[in-house]
Image (cartoon, rainbow, N blue to C red):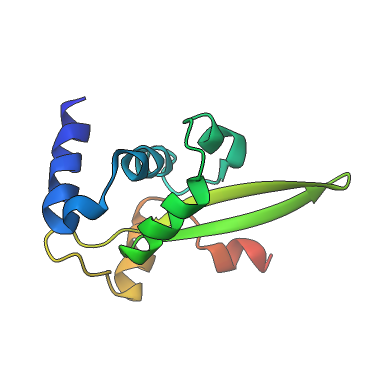
Length: 117
């Protein structure tokens, strides 16, 4: 629990009042998934009515959040995942080579390698 509050404090320092409690809850859920796809019902379970507006705010703050749609028996299922976070000291996005290295070190495949199979 201490780690989340420390993380929240760092985000508040970098982004100020732009980082709301709702943004923080969505970001925590995406971070806990460690790059895996999070189904929309899990995000909706957070009780955030305008989740898409919060995700847009996070994207504008520099978080790279990817969305995927999947159609199963005529029903659309939506998923989200966090790919890149801004540098906690500068608020800047890491270089693409740094991201690729982080994914490789974490044992996660890149999106392109999964899609192109």
